[in-house]
Amino acid sequence: MPKKPLPETEETLADIDGESPEAVQYAIRLVNVSRVYDFGDSEVVALKDVNLDVAPGNLVVVSGPSGSGKTTLLNIVGGLDYPSGGRVVIMDVPIGDYDETFRATFRLTNTGFVFQSYNLISTLTALENVMFPMQLSDKDCGTLRANATKLLEDVGLSNRFNHLPWQLSSGEQQRVAMARAMANDPPIIIADEPTANLDSESAETIRGLLVKLNKIGKTVLVVTHDEDIISLPEARHLRMSDGVLSTDA
Ligand code: ADP
Ligand code: MG
Image 1 (cartoon, rainbow, N blue to C red):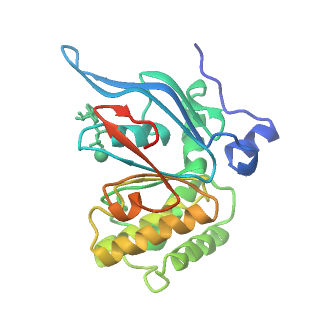
Image 2 (spheres, rainbow, N blue to C red):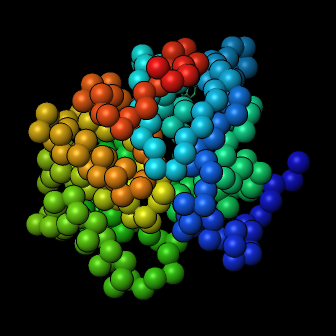
């Protein structure tokens, strides 16, 4: 089936930008999603018939053993990977129906990623790392720089704008990554074991930032073993085991 190009109506583009999240029914909807890695003579089934509905503004926490499919799940929700079967609907948009150009724009404007190992670009300063995902914006450079400055201030790094990643502590690097995830003010934040490499004080800061984003209305999907995230009163906790996502505990 041919893939649809980028839609051009104003109404649909507003949806892509995530400008009207209150009108959205599902921030994330997965219907019978599977992911099979095919090696010719063998295959790995990373996700088996996964179903998930997440309303806008929810905080969902997924835990489970190593190799159970958690990162695969996040990559598919974030549009970094594609399912072998099933349907993926993000902000009510069935992203599998669209071509790669659309999906690249869609994931930049709708999802912000935070990784266990920060994944900052080593040759760019903190400010430049935060500005990096803003490249598709039609705003002028001065406005983008001001926005990035504000995002770094929000994570408490107003005195670290020009530091390179290696000049920052682990906790500071993850705070830059949190600011970068917010670069395009996406409605969905996806975090893959965001506190796993951090000391307890830095982990507490990152937990606080995730809760703050959720409180301002962001949908937050976190994979973690961090009991202090799992036990958050606002969190809905799901378990992944062998590619199967449990229903609500
Ligand atoms: P988790 O994040 O829970 O540790 P992953 O989603 O990374 O699990 O991996 C799930 C399964 O899929 C594992 O068996 C892993 O080896 C396999 N897998 C993950 N990514 C790939 C890939 N790109 N190619 C082949 N197999 C993969
Ligand atoms: Mg993983």
